[in-house]
Image (cartoon, rainbow, N blue to C red):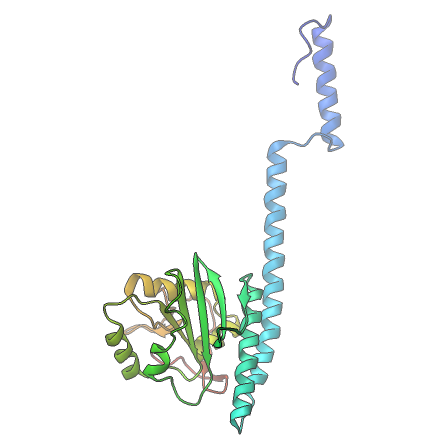
Length: 262
């Protein structure tokens, strides 16, 4: 209300009284200026985002420490190696939750074990993680058959800590030619970057999925050295400016040294 009722006997006094009331209401925050309220809301949202990002960094740091300890293990038996794999699966589940992605840990369907699953950008992704001394075979990759038989919105994520053999990947691509590519790949270096916090999980998934959807690439490292240039860039081709990249996957975590070309 900015003016008195038309029937008020003294319009001028009524306007003055309303102005005084508005000033008092504003001063006591009974009445809030819309522009100020919007600015305060934006500032509060920004502070929440900063706090959430800091909390995420702290949690990722805790997971990184656990990942470092896991990489220091030297499993001597198949049982030890299997236990290390289970611990990795739990760390991955925690990493997804830290990034507000709902991750379902290892479960079985009709006797078939699925290492985990998550939902992202309208698709369900089934995960399979392998921590072996050698890269996966073509049968391992083609055998991510949990995806087959599911609805079309189901895809797969294969994680091989030992990396991938180029000849095997070529064979898999040729074998799968003509069918839809519904698998994306992560290797040990990729996983290390995620736990190191160098690349965020959501950014990593977007880079991998975009490479598969737009270029038909099931395998694109998160970091690779562009031919003819010294810049380290991410999987989408964007330079990682201002970041100190001083680690490389050694098979036993991050060892000092430059990133190898991929």
